[in-house]
Every structure is written in C-alpha cells, then in structure tokens.
Amino acid sequence: MVLIDGKATANQIKNEIAEEVKAIQSKGERAPHLAAVLVGNDGASLTYVGSKVRSCEKVGFDSSLIRLPEETTEAELLTKIKELNQDDTLDGYIVQLPLPKHIDEEKVLLAIDPKKDVDGFHPSNFGRMALELETFIPATPFGIMQLIERYDIDTQGKHVVVIGRSHIVGRPISILMSQKGAYGNATVTVAHSRTKDLKSLTQQADIIVSALGVPGFVTADMVKKGVVIIDVGITRVEDASKEKGYYITGDVDFDSVAQKASFITPVPGGVGPMTIAMLLKNTLLARKWNA
Ligand code: BQF
Image (cartoon, rainbow, N blue to C red; front, side, top):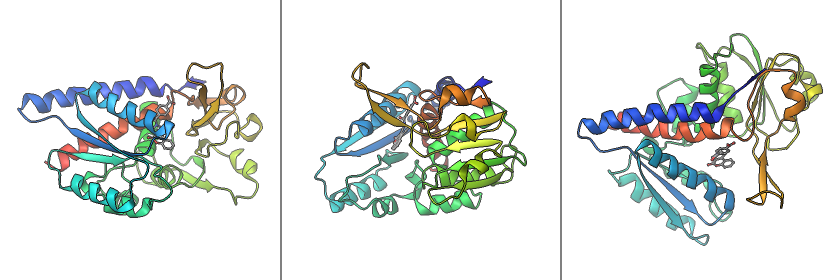
C-alpha cells in the first residue's frame, strides 16, 4: 500500500511556484497577487482563508484578505466584487464559501470576472473545463489530478466511482477523469444519494473518489483488493481532548480500507493541502494569462 502524501506533494508544488515567482521578480515584474473575500466569522472558513494567506506568503505572492461582516448584504458584496474585478493590481481572487444564507452564491459567482476566477467556479470557466479549453480548474479536483499524475496512478480504461455530485468536487472530477489524456480515459460512474446498490458499484471500482462528508462511510467490505482511494471528505468532529477542540476526518474508514488499497490518501494530509497548492497554481496561471 502506498500512502499518498498530499502535504509533501503540496509543499513540492509550492516550492516550484516559489521558483517561478523569483523568476518573475528577477525580470523586474511584480509578484502574483491573490485576494480572498471572507464574509462572516465561520470557524472553518477562517481556518481555510488563513492557510491560503499564509501559503501566499510562503511562495512570495502578495495577498489581501478582505473581511466583511456577517450582516453584509448581497448588494454590498456585489459592489465589492465589481471593485475587485477592476483592480489591476490583483491577478485573481476568491470568495470563500459557504456564504451566509441571505446571500445568493450563484449570483455572486456569476459576478466574478472569469479571468480572475482562480477558484474556477464561474459557469464560463466550468464550461471551458468541460470542453477541454484552457481555464482555471477548481482547486480540489485539480489537486486530485496532480496527485494521480505525480504518483503515476494508471487511469486508462479504469472504472472510477465518484461518490458525490457537488459542483466543486464530484461533478468536475468526474469530467476530468473521463477526458482524454495520460491521466484520464477512465470510465466514470457518479454515485449520489439516489444511487441504488452503491456497494455493488464500489466493489467493482478500480478507483474511488469519495466527496460526501460522512465519516466512516466507505468501509472495507465495499472495496476490492488493490483499489485506489481518494478521500475528499472533511468533517470536523468535536473532541475536547484535542488542542483545537476538534479533529478532522474523512469519508473512509482508513484503517480497514488501507489494508486492501494499493494507494490511499489520508485525512488530514491528503487532498486538503493540495487544494491550497492548486489555488496558488491557478493564481500563477492568472498572472501569465492576463499579462
Ligand atoms: C488537510 C473546504 C469544505 C467547504 C469549504 C488541508 C484544507 C483542508 C484540509 C483546506 C476546504 C477544504 C477548503 C487539510 C480549503 C480544503 O490537511 O487535510 C487544507 O484548507 N481546504 C476551503 O477553502 O473551503 C472549503 C471544504
């Protein structure tokens, strides 16, 4: 069994990005600049945005964190987004999700200039991805594809079962893995809450991508020997004995499933760190494409 080290791979990618930043600056050009908008005070969102900003510093990017109060109206946020679209000192920006319930996420994502949409959530970027055009690929699926490449996992003609059909993970990874290419050409099944007999599907899977958010959902009896396991689930479980008062866990019953797997991603330290690294990669691409 190979334990896929997402943290080490993400650090490697960040080092590669840092080298490119140095090359940009040695030409007398400014460093790439990423901004993040955070509305409200959600604990997990604060953690995620915080590590995005720290990662920017690590690779030599400029970063801006724009914090808006929980009560911010949709109109106020849209005004801020118009400002960011017009800010020539920014290469790209993200709006940290989820947004407070009184704000329509779809409206907000539509307002982001696709050229600055380094999360790749704008419909035109999603469409470009589906059509295999140059675009920002959403960071989590982009990170999964990088892990598959860098661990040289064979996907040709393999049966991939994706559990979950979210716009951010399940749907895009199902598209990417079915596309032509060295780490594509898979036959993909997208499973979801209405899927019948999931176990018979996962038992046939060569690769399982679980993006559900239910701890312990994927158990050893559901998988065949030699399966590749990509665990995208991230659930915070309260635990007073932990320093932070919680620990994070994936969708996969790791200890039992690992015994049957050929490759497996842990949680934490698997796909999560890659998400951050690929956001930086997209910002670097924005810098290049918008120059
Ligand atoms: C790790 C996210 C759900 C909803 C909105 C490292 C991250 C997570 C885990 C991280 C995520 C999840 C992010 C680990 C960003 C991934 O070591 O396992 C990093 O920061 N993520 C987000 O920005 O918004 C989310 C999940």
